[in-house]
Image (tube, rainbow, N blue to C red; front, side, top):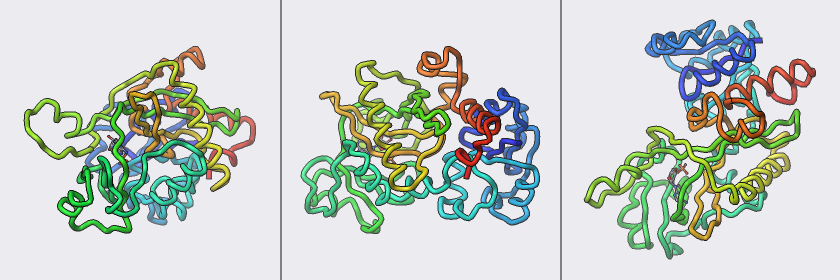
Length: 327
Ligand code: AMP
C-alpha cells in the first residue's frame, strides 16, 4: 500500500511518518512546489497537477486507485477539494470522510458540541443580543481574515456591512489563553491519545502588542508555537475530547477517526471553552516532529501525528481491519 497526500500543510510530516513505518509514499503536487518537496526526498512518487482541484479529475483518481494509494487528508486538502466533493471522492481516504462536512459547517458543528455537552462561547443569534465583547465570524473568512470584534449592536451595525447573516456567527469573545490540543482517536485500540499541543501564531492579533496603535486584529495563521498545559488541567481536556468523540459516534457513525484538534480558550477561572474542532491532522502538529512530551510519556518514544497515522494503517492491515480506519 502507498500513503499519499497533497503537497502542502503537513505533507512532510505525513510522508516522514509513512516512510518510518515502511510505506511507499506519493505526493500530489503542483508544478511550482515540486522543487521544494524534492529537497526533502520523502516522496517516492509524484503526480503533478496544475492546481490541486485536479485531484478530483477522473483520470487522476483512477491513477491513485491503480497505485493502491490511501490519501491522508489535511487542512489544505479539505480547503482545495471541498468537504462536499470529498464525499464523492473514490480514492480511499484515511479517516471518516463524513466528519469533514461536520467540521466545516458551523451549524452542524454547534449541534455536535451541544451533544458533547462541552462548554462553548455563548452565541448571539441576533445582533440585538450583543451585551459583551463578541467576535463576528463568517463563512469563507480564510484564516480568520476579516473577523470583526464588537461590543454592542451599535458597533455591529457600524462595522459589519456586507456579511451574509445566514452564514455568519456572532460569538462571545473569551478572554484567556489559547490551547490547541492534538488528539488521536484510535478505533483499533479504543483509545483517545493526546499527541501534543500548540498555539497558533496569528497576524496581526499576536503582533499588535508590539505597536502603540489601535488596529483591528486579524487572525491569519502564520505559524505555530509549541505549548504544554498545566498538568491539573489535562483531565478536563481529556473529558472534553472523550465527549467530542462520543458525540461524533452518536451523530455520524463511525464518527471521528484518527487525528483531530480542539480549539480551546482557558480563562483565569481555569474554565475551558471549546470554539472549534478540526477533524483531521492540523498543521500545529508540525511543532511536534518527531514527538511531543505527551507521546513520549505515552509510548516511551517519539511519535509524530504523521507517524501515528502510518502506525494505525499498518496495524489495520495486519489485523484485517482496514475498513475501520479508511473510508
Ligand atoms: P477560528 O476561525 O474559529 O479558528 O478563529 C480564529 C481565531 O480567532 C482563533 O485562533 C482565536 O485566536 C480567535 N477566536 C475565535 N473564536 C474566539 C472566541 N470565541 N474567543 C476568543 N478568541 C477567539
